[in-house]
View 1 (cartoon, helix red, strand yellow):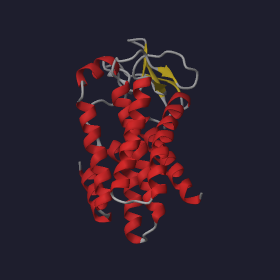
View 2 (cartoon, helix red, strand yellow; view 1 turned 60 degrees about the horizontal axis):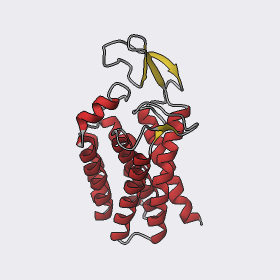
View 3 (cartoon, rainbow, N blue to C red; view 1 turned 120 degrees about the vertical axis):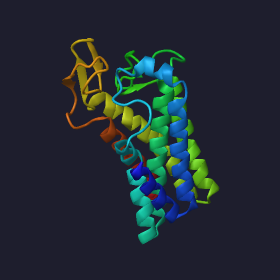
View 4 (cartoon, rainbow, N blue to C red; view 1 turned 30 degrees about the horizontal axis):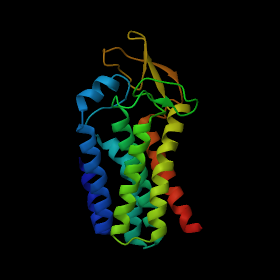
Length: 233
């Protein structure tokens, strides 16, 4: 909660555009997390590391880079900070929307992005038609808000592109390198250190320190880099 307040204060201080983008992300993320929450919990609650309201670590992972860009824009104004902030937040929004809507049992099972194999809902690196559509919608929303506040056109386009690419990058990293664990009692993969059954899980594959929060941070970094490339071009 404190992290969200600090982040919000920095964003508003940087300008109403910064604040509007951040509040749109948080309010939409909260809204989608509550949408059919029981259905999503039943579908993927035993696999995902966290479900429901976002904690302070998730706030930093999703909004930290945006906050740094907003703060630096106050210290040393530069359009590049707009691109970094918008790209990072568009990626966080795209990934969050894709995750929340991707866990719903609509339109067929998800597939692993690396080999297109059908996998259970909630599997790291999985994508679906509904999830991809949600990702594009979230990225475009942030881009349109940036346009509404008259941010430079290349920032607007970069934010949309960064959002989609960042979300896809999140899926690739999740499929290839994110830490995965195994519950010996339930005989199923999970991201949880302690499974819903109460059993301590075992390391299955992936990099030990690369959990979902780190992957989300990398997602925003990819989005920021893609958006900033439009400044170079």
